[in-house]
Length: 258
Ligand code: NAD
Image (cartoon, rainbow, N blue to C red; front, side):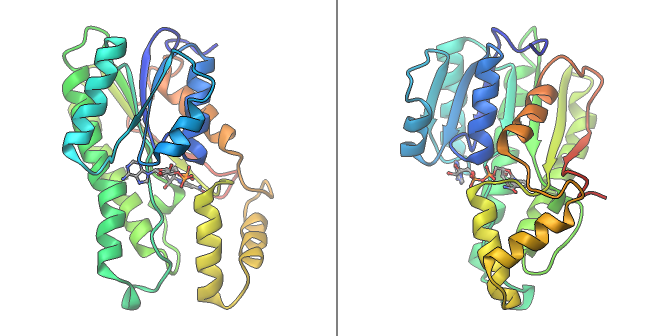
């Protein structure tokens, strides 16, 4: 068992997605109470299917300030504190060159990937700084937050942006006794990669399968991550096992980075 998780409360966004679901499952297995937040109510209900009293599903839009206040209030109401916050919701947007992309799509990607991180992390810091036990925050960026690739500039820029936000936040909240880190996965077997493989394939005139094969080959470990492998690192960063990790960008890429 990881230190500092059992009996504590975590709020996880993007909780019904590939990575978020496994983060919720891992935190529950470690004995946490988990508030699972996602826009996709049907998928949330599936996650909550076995009726675990330690899991509270909340359907909410993380880009909305009132929804953000509502899911933190629900966490406090049900469990009494928020000790861990994982800002994990994200969208990939469309694959297109900068010169051809739809600016409304860029706004949407920035709303979900950046605005939501400011809203969620801001609320978490206000709440945690008033708690005796303070707290730990994790923001999911990506190896795409450290480098660029053709056709995915909106996503890449949004992930660079959240890393920048965390680098400032690190200086602000370390003195308050709140830790924050960035989780930066490489390629992970989820819906998001299926969508990106299809889009990158169209851009390059190859099949989605060709894109996937090329990405597998680019990873020194030779394969995509399974979501539970990313969740293992997330739980570790949210735990008290690593009390001196603060402001770190932790890549989990099977060797894809650098
Ligand atoms: P996913 O599409 O399976 O999950 C994303 C979840 O976010 C979905 O359940 C979706 O409903 C939710 N969501 C989207 N917009 C929302 C909103 N406005 N409000 C609330 N919830 C919303 O994708 P995933 O791979 O699990 O991605 C999780 C995170 O990991 C994302 O931030 C993503 O950018 C990041 N990431 C993924 C990969 C990968 O290869 N899959 C790699 C690096 C980083």
